[in-house]
Image (cartoon, rainbow, N blue to C red; front, side, top):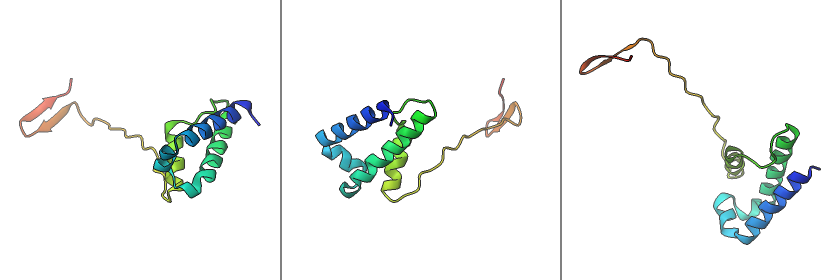
Length: 97
């Protein structure tokens, strides 16, 4: 087991033991152990990839969403391509140059 992961998990548990209302804002009380287990899994995956063990904000949100019985949304990269340098508006054409 990675030492960084264990330190990270211990700090998370310590924080939520000191601030139980913050935990209840994220997940139901009965899923507390499952919450810590999922955090451990993702932290180990991060460490195995050579990344930092602490979870990203999105990873933490995804865990909370799953534990609350919903499906996390995938990040969608929105790419807009300009078809032309001229954009039509109700005031007439605008040149995007």
